[in-house]
Length: 587
Image 1 (spheres, rainbow, N blue to C red):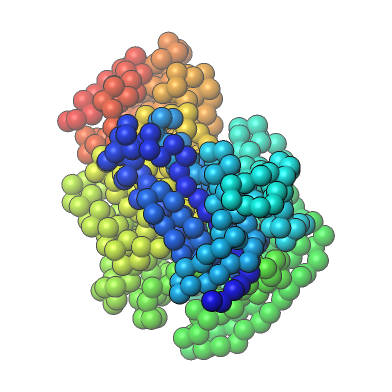
Image 2 (image 1 turned 180 degrees about the vertical axis):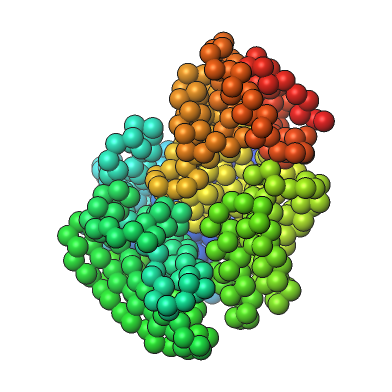
């Protein structure tokens, strides 16, 4: 027999038998989804599951820090998912973690170290994490989660008392309306903003490449779940502006800033990158890369790893990272996608979306297995529909759904592909499936602002209006200067409307409308005014909504009013009718 020292995590579902007795099929389906998330997070933190039966999982880690981080990530992910379930249907995990000597028998682990973890799990309350004193000594001063001492406990078949501590894993910065209206505080983990890399090529045509490289680096950093990474849209709000990094750090509420430049000449490329501590302006790391263009992916990987290593080396060493989301070895397909993405983000006009769609299709033609190209094609088509530029909603819906589904089929670990599937499920009026796709995107990338927005949006459509507010505000915090802020505010206003908080909804709708006079912003404000009985200025606002309405109004409403319950849809239409905007949305 081989003996080894190991960190053992034991977990099971509280009251599992009761849940199965009440709803066997629903409980088993939810359990399957949750266990996929649990397994992913264990693997991401360099752990391995060596035993599972029914609702229980037992895993091994070589690092106490990574074991606790995995447990916290699991509880946070399942807590977020449970918000979509009725209280009596929620699956809540009890987790116990121990550091002890174990016996290795093939792939299985046995012995006292495993038994103590199991006993810790049994004494944990639902959604709790209980750890042994031996484990606590190993993580002392290395993690920010508060530990609550529970004293020494006697355990069945364990001959000695075991010191027990509870991990207070809910120590995340709250995101509420008040927190977003005042200077942003630093998150409880390393926080980073990547500013747009400067195009030094002297060729404006290469602007798309500098922007694309920046976006890929933001994506790579955001996949480190123990970092807080500002979304691409807010970082790009500083493009072309000469601002002090200290001010940018205060504006975005981050501790670190990454900036750099790109020079491309023929087949050669030069990339510089530097990491700056925002509060002091001190440069922590800088590097220059002179390579062939074919080495662009290696440059992205190295730059990302150097940034992570300069901030928190233990994360880079301990946390298993997925490869950067590239999905192709065809550089022409990659460059075509970068051009299409650049246009998609540049300006929302029919011409830019049509050209972005053309470039995405070209990337697919060059490499049909390029998941990211299918994902961006779905997003571009959805955007064309959302802004009312589609001339055939049925055709566009069919293509965007096919592209989104193929993107996930080609790369099931791409959070952006699952976000595209969420959009497709909106178009198909499958609100519950949209919730699941948004949740999966956040599981894979908790820094993904658009996925949090999509989760809030889809919760509105399934009728979980109160639960929609938290992810929408989280999206705002991850991207505080987003050009899409009007959309975040519009969805918050819509959730407040359905809660019957018409005054609050009106305030949010007016803020959204001040940022963009779009049809979707106009109708939410009109619905609020209708329910409040306000008559002043209605005629002018109704006229503006009529002028801004898409040509195919029936097609537009069929894709963007994906309520699961007809009563909720009627509630919204009722506000519009009271405001004087009466029409047949099914026409």
